[in-house]
Length: 213
Ligand SMILES: [Zn+2]
Image (cartoon, rainbow, N blue to C red; front, side, top):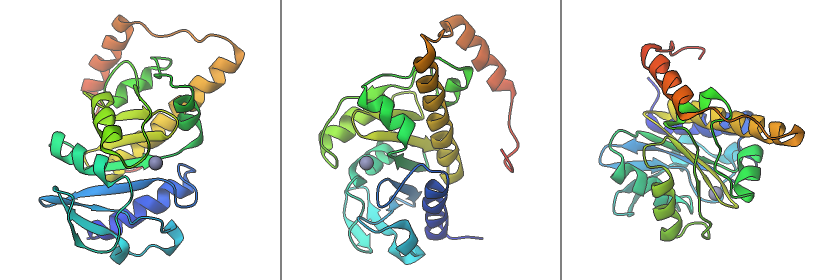
């Protein structure tokens, strides 16, 4: 079985492969006992090893490793506030970030938005990266949701484990691309609250297989 460090490295590589992150942007973490393992600051994914991952406790103290991602605060705060969450990924992916620069919530432009936990993906207000204010606003935008946008910055996606968080991030990027494309042609129709309720009832009966989904 792969270690949490290896899984975090694999997720970081997949984020680059799927064009969610470029260079040293973006970061990821996984819950680790009473704390978390988070990707290091300013290390390109190609140069990361399992040992590069930084182990921290929930007070923000580094227990093992070098400098954690500058965004460690929202990772830590999410694990503290959301006991059901086991992994967090953060990306500056192009379509989600484009909408975040417009400071738009993503509406129910496609029924798959329900996988992020609601009828919208909220956009948190802008604050400079790494600050507590950004984390507080992100937590608010993530209330009852598994994803949010960060104004003029990017997106956050949550999951019960790393593959889950990554699949939410991929889906959010895809929804943002669809919304962006629809806006180029006209004003997309938005699904109603009743139509989204119907989707949620269907989702409750539908459990996708883990592999290949
Ligand atoms: Zn960022």
